[in-house]
Image 1 (cartoon, one colour):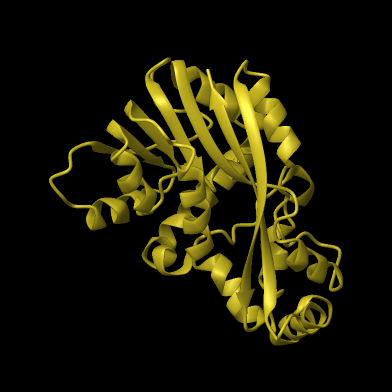
Image 2: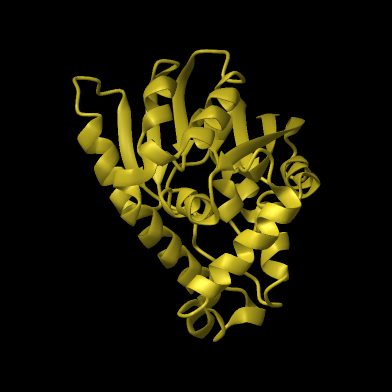
Length: 271
């Protein structure tokens, strides 16, 4: 049974990523790097693949060359609409599908490859989403999952803590939690972690890099119900941004550039 808070978060995630569809490709450089690193694990040709969180379909096109058919799925309808517009071709091997990773609209044992890059961190139940992924995997199937983990956006989170005690950056589960969730489903799992760092001229550019890809959704938790809406209206005023940038510059800047860390775990699973 999905909770009211989870449902509310899913609606906001879908809306924000839909809004960012037109700007995503020009802003999501590090996401593309991470996806291509994940693609290195897709070393076979498969009959049917599933791309969870396909976004604008940039990686789906590459995955489709390694599958007879590929289901490219995303929660955000705006992303799928954009993906279909820019991927118009005679290639009928890709089927575009709106769906939720926590409730995959696929039959049991129906795919022999699952791919997901930089999407599963939005799920608030690691065991549930890994159960769904395992359910749709056929015997002998593989899954390649790249997931943002604890340690991501640590500089930004640390800088916000100097301003107030409110949460401004999403909590990311640690890699071990994802590894345990995958193993609990009976999957054979190999895991690697890698850190990526993007560099920005100022705090506005840094925050824009997150917003332009739709990842600026601050998920509501039980503890923050009723707080997020009223706090968000005035938090990003000029004074706050200046304070945030001053601390960020003093503690983290290198060559006048502000770093933003993405901590990613790569799970290679087999059933």
